[in-house]
Length: 289
Image 1 (cartoon, helix red, strand yellow):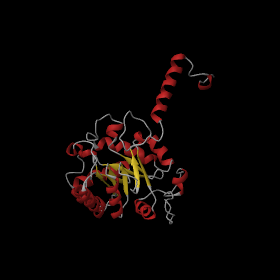
Image 2 (cartoon, helix red, strand yellow):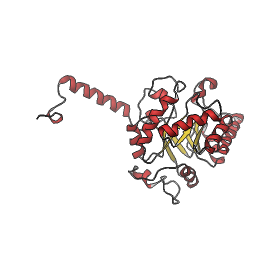
Image 3 (cartoon, one colour):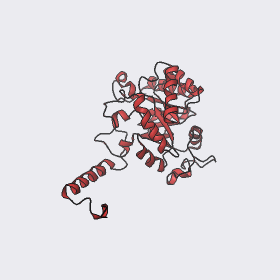
Image 4 (spheres, helix red, strand yellow):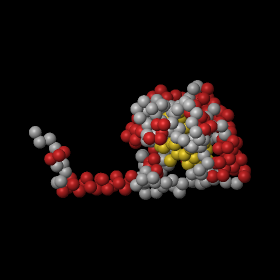
């Protein structure tokens, strides 16, 4: 991100306009609030490995989220709840190695921060020391404000997560939109303010009515990053497999920007056909002497 003021509605930095190049300016946490102040939309995608993280980083994505959604997308779980800290460290390390520009945020999985500030600090410290994460993210509002404050005081940036919180899906009754009705919307706003005052550098709003997300975005100094929360958030995030059309199902709010899953399947079928038919490897792809 450029340190100089930029016009509203322009990319966060020149690197974001045409893809980040080696040596591009690293996205830092203070750039997030600066982008909000300038009216620049932030971009965020999940990433779980070096190869895809490098592609997204080169494309100019501002933040890469090593999400506990790895449980659903890569490990075959029905939810992110079974994911452990030990399972999160290696993919976080890989994404950090790939990211030359993007700010890498890693999820604290269920059971690794709820007990209190000491547990949250111990978990987050592992992410920074063992994986090199730039920031961490975990779910909750007022109830986790002490954890956010403890990490902030220790020099660890925190991204909040409100609205539908996947780790609490059993309490919430499944995948349900949150913040509907005046009372629920007010609670969401109070939680957002609590997260901000505790020191969070940004907050994800998931599956929240667009007008409610717009109101929260208006009252916060820190940027909001929406996922199923309408167009008025300060940025947007998607699970990359949804963005790339990789699965048989994706949530209503997601959009497949390219049929990557279909193309990958076609490539695999073409490969298998040529191997079985003896067309590949051919002379061009063989050592003949």
